[in-house]
Length: 79
Image 1 (cartoon, rainbow, N blue to C red):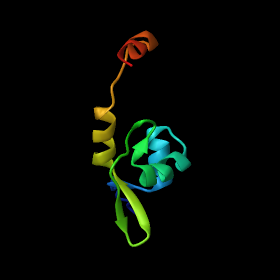
Image 2: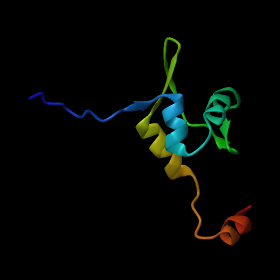
Image 3: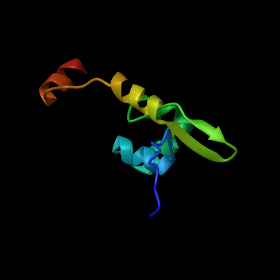
Image 4: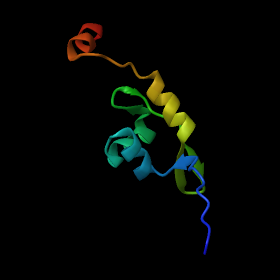
């Protein structure tokens, strides 16, 4: 019987990041060029050679910094 150890991922690929954030991969790719993702500063990323990775802790911080609303009316009032 083999035993598998589950090690939590600490960094996501661009595709995994897009899925985690609920946006298109092309939006995440473009955010590295423009510095913006959906009108907000883009999340931080790291590079290993040509590989791009997003730390889970950076993505969680990015999400916490986004405003949340209880209604569209509340969001509209703040714009």
